[in-house]
Image 1 (cartoon, rainbow, N blue to C red):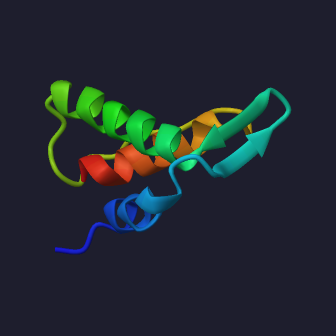
Image 2 (cartoon, rainbow, N blue to C red):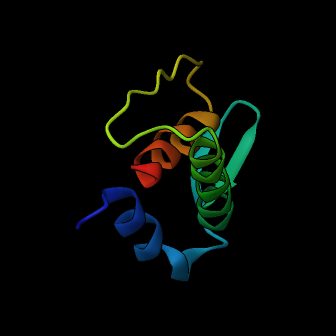
Image 3 (cartoon, rainbow, N blue to C red):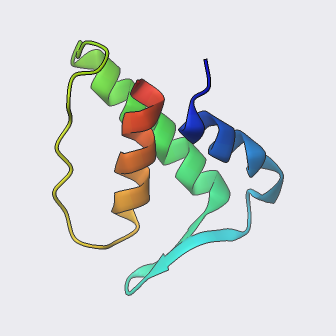
Length: 76
């Protein structure tokens, strides 16, 4: 099954050192985004959430947003 987050992260693996997102506090490279999104997905999996259960993401527009969004998609 297609996982859009996995497709996006895997598709940018060759650009690991390139900036993916920039906010007021700094930048996030594609490699950092990949590593952090996968860690967030693992943290959600450790909570034993079931498939299609909802996760509320309430945060400021920072580099943390793509991490949590993509991590949630990775977790399914």
